[in-house]
Image (cartoon, one colour):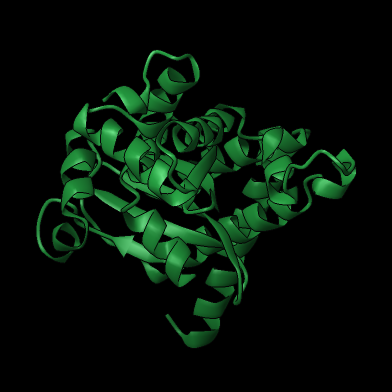
Length: 250
């Protein structure tokens, strides 16, 4: 294909992707947009699932997913505090784990790779949400077979991530919730979107009080308990909040 024809083809692909994104979010309320865009990503790309998370205080806060499998593998990363989405958030650039069954990617995240493959996922592609200076979260794409994304597919994934970023930034921020509550602006911003993960923050506070430790240590204890009991951080948090688990009695 000649360079000019190649440029035209890419232009058509971008236009088609933009049309699919626009159609996917048409009529959606703010809280529906993350989930809708996850489904659009699955339609546009050779992946089986997608999820979107904000990263707050080192904890991925899942806002939406295209399937239960995608949601579960995202929770694995949140529980471990490790995985492609953590690396993408820290580096602010795409992280493409093309084969979780062998080679370099297994060495980078050995525990996550094992748990992800047990859940039926063989490749993960994490796209940062934000700009060149700030990463606020990730769009995580999951596939049940190893393989690379083409350059055009990476561009499409980044386009979806860009739209996701704009959509999230347009959501009501802390100042629209009023002041004087003692809750941080970023936490108020998340409150309407990730109500399940409010329990993680509440449980972290309870563990802090039970053990007399700081927030980082409390979150690490919660994650360690979840991992050692083959559970997720969110499930353990619910047990803590409901007083089924106390960390000062372990």
